[in-house]
Length: 137
Image (cartoon, rainbow, N blue to C red; front, side):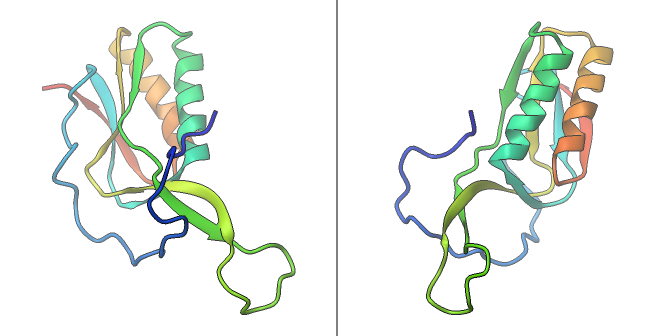
C-alpha cells in the first residue's frame, strides 16, 4: 500500500530546483527512541518509503513500533514511452517527498538498540539519500 495524498490542490506540480537548505523542523527524534536522519537533501518516492518500512518491520518481526515522519505529497509526471517531444506535460506517475538534510525520516521504539540499528541500516539501503542512525537525547 503506497502512500499518496487523498486530494491535491493542483494535479500537476512543477519540479522545482535543487533543495539547498538544511531542515530546521523535524530534526530531533520525538516519538520513538531511535531514528534515521537524512544527511543530504533529495526526493524520496512513495515506493522507497514503503520498501524501507517493510524492511524494518520484517527485521523486527513486528515487535516494537515504527513511525514514518515524511509524506510523499509532491506529484511527479512522466510521459509515455516513445512519445514525441511537445504535446504538453505527461500524466501523474508517482508521488515523492521532498527531504532536506537533517530531517528525521523514520523512528522506532520497543526494540533494543542493536536490533534498531540493523533494521534502520536495512531501511537506509532502500532510500535515495545518505542517512545516519540517531538516538533520542
